[in-house]
Length: 207
Ligand SMILES: Cc1cc2nc3c(=O)[nH]c(=O)nc-3n(C[C@H](O)[C@H](O)[C@H](O)COP(=O)(O)O)c2cc1C
Image: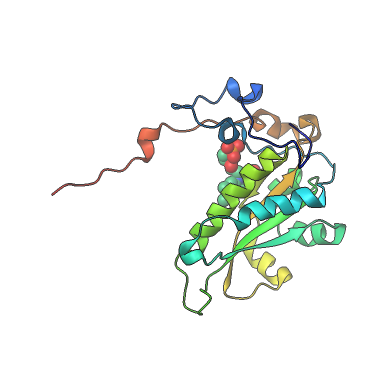
């Protein structure tokens, strides 16, 4: 499905054609996982408020250490908010982020509710981003995380308190026309592949 409709969304039952020829899972994982990939071409079509808040709601239900829910989001939707984000996103990313309708900045609170340091805040924010991206995919929306932004400028213009750590800008919107992004990016506007699973399995030494 491509349009947001609360009554009709359901798990996709098949791999999209665009990923079927590129992504080959070693095991039959749910198509939702394989169908998600991060385009750079976004349409100017606005994201309905209901869809935006559904995506954020999914993030809300992410697991976190001691259920501290340390993720925080700056949400840029208006022209004025976009202008603030444009001041810190690096020029190479602005070539394609400038056209997107919604920009989020995922951050996390480094303190627990009791004021002690939360060693898990960044890990938990990562979990929230993963779930958010899958919920977006279910609603026919796409996402791409962007680490290429100036954190120093971002903290300054957003007036971010010391205890908040900034992670990634997240672009959220409907897929757009590849021809509208710079030609240098066309070749990369496709689902990426993955290293073999053997590469991420570590050995437990048995003594
Ligand atoms: C923390 C993080 C930072 C990223 N930074 C950038 C970035 O600055 N510019 C960009 O075009 N893509 C960026 N990406 C997107 C990744 O390159 C992309 O997710 C990865 O290549 C896997 O592709 P897929 O998401 O399409 O499966 C970032 C992704 C993450 C998770």
